[in-house]
Length: 360
Image (cartoon, rainbow, N blue to C red; front, side, top):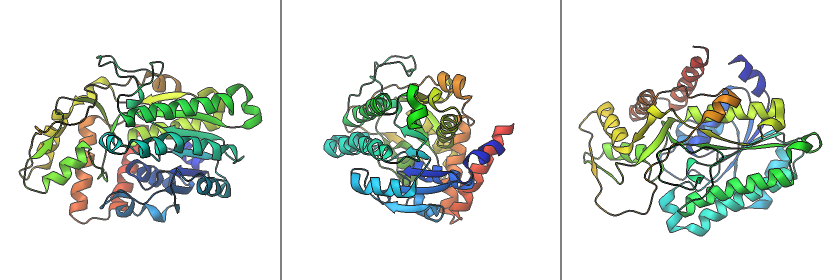
């Protein structure tokens, strides 16, 4: 913990997507570590939302802007002169990508291009973490977990757009920030691929935990689209810890870690949707229940598993929360919100408890 504070104290960080679920958690954690943060994002896309409930706007310089607006992005970044970039801004919903493929590609692909171009105009930048997804791989529907060396792909617009974001990041690293010339440009670029992230404060559409939480209050069984789908579940703080660790490595030894990394749970935490839903029903109580949705849905991959051995071996990272604990923390967060507790303080305590596990 002391080493983390030493790394981030006073560090200038530019965070895209700071009004989203993961961005809000990351902003609060960075603030607690003493970083100076400028966030660049659209308004929160749901009501309620984590950004407002946890008072994230009080811990950073809150800039509202579209990642597709290159001119505004460049001005915001160059004026702030950050050392570290975390790029989380994205259109992250599979079904929405079918409804708006043009907007999805514009945000996820050209948004990444815009970010990289702005970095080229910002000489203060030293470390860049572009966050993509486990869905960036060409899905083979096999039982083996995907490794960073496996082919990129994507059946749907969302998945393929994030594979494209990976290719864009790699191309800029090769063309403008090559590892062998880091002593000249001083920029190290890495990408991070995480699994299905859960935690308090997520109200996104078409995500399992938010759908369940919304549905539990209705008194009716919650409809689940694909109960047999298998996903690598993890609490939001686990991949965020991975992003922070990767950024620290880039800052300390720069070029060596300029690569792509999976951040996923162990095999024991790769569960089918129905098992997650049933577990959360038992934790929630009060008559909560779910049933299978019989209405046909868009294509989604049946099974996804990540091999995070590279992050374990090279970064010393490993997940701290088992899935049962992650579900307990998630349930506790939403129930505290329903009781009207101070969610900024509640979130801070969960971050502190997570950090306390580093020394155990």
